[in-house]
Length: 112
Image (cartoon, rainbow, N blue to C red; front, side, top):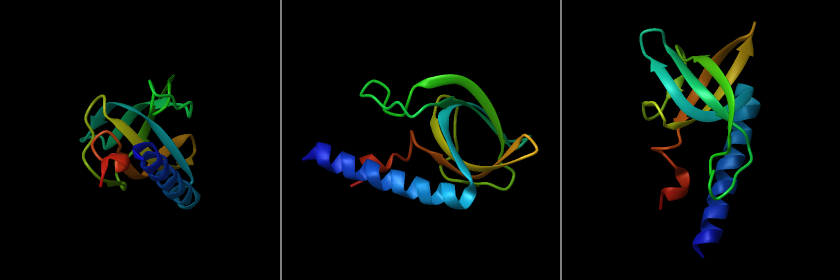
């Protein structure tokens, strides 16, 4: 029963992400390396979509990306090592975050 609920919750999160991606452009997920409040940037190591029981948020790719979060809606403030999901747009090789979700501290599959 818990597995079905988790699967349904995951499907709901994916559906919301796809809708957000259509509106915002693209979505990245990965481990927060740095949240520089003064520079209004967040740096993450991106994860792929190879979800496994050992890597429930994906596998680290080694790709490090910096996002401008000056105009982003940020939920729970990120800290290093938190898993983040970022909806963003890209312009002139710069990434502008629209929304930042702290998956580690706001995991929808854990909510009742």
